[in-house]
Length: 432
Ligand SMILES: [Zn+2]
Image (cartoon, rainbow, N blue to C red):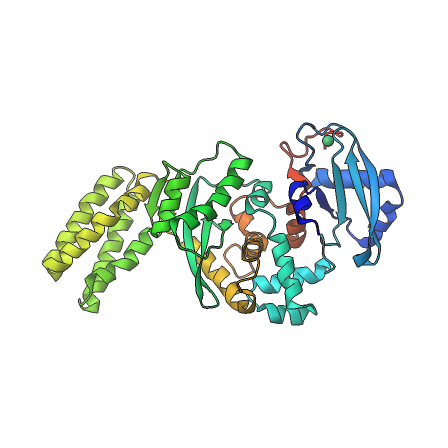
């Protein structure tokens, strides 16, 4: 397949919606009509073609050459070329998937069933394909970076993030999925066989490089973690100076562990008190950190008075250990306070991985597979009883998707030859 050559050459394939197959075959016979159709389509999406670095895209496009795809029954595909920079774009009609024989409508149903956590095997039975073919389609979409796809939807790079790792299993081995989430969108879903800080830094570093390639001045202002050492360390290494917070709900859930041997009602009461304390501090508009410090001291005193010296001290030590992370949350009103949305993401991904146990094997393409699942997570709209029914994660975060059809969106957004136009729809006729 010439992997080496493919990696260095720029992928300038574009998927174009010809509405139906007969339209495609009609315009195929007329070179001028073909190019015009493609240009009108790109303009309507608010996209522009990815020319070579030196080209401003003001030139003309001509039909360059064509070839027949044997595996698709000899379907003719055309390439078009920019007359200025000579960049060549392969035009894929919407009813063809890049490098695959699987029909898009089959892939659409199978991916939706996958996204709904139906096992790979059952998805395959429903859609009359092999489980491996479905696995490969997910991996193919997963070759495209999340950062590229999300920024094409007009989402700004996240300045406040939730970062945490999911502990999972590959057969009997423990594996880790370092994840970055902002609201309802996954920006990074990595895969690591080691839980070392170096391994996590490597994984999160992939996100950082992609983000910096997109915006060289990119910086993370705040990150919320659950306090796992390797995650915090890699955040510090990659994003020095970033405000690092600890999840407040996580803190709340940990408190009962500090009161071992104490009766359940008393533990529950303490948790309620601690909850009220955090809540009141978050509601304040000023001096939030001072208020929290004061209340945490009172709280530890209260534990000493009601449950005893030993427990009071244990809570005091715990507070001492964690308070910097809580202060960081309260210092900046833009900081996320809980990692609930990240936990939900991890649960959703975990259900899919569980349904695909057979493919979670040492020789698999885990990274591509996970990224593919993450694209589905970001782009498939929520079902009709959900909170944001009909919208996908990208839209909930106020990004825009090219069409109302999530699968077409997935095809367009993972095309290598497009970019979001800097000033959508105002481009002069030749400037596509
Ligand atoms: Zn050009």
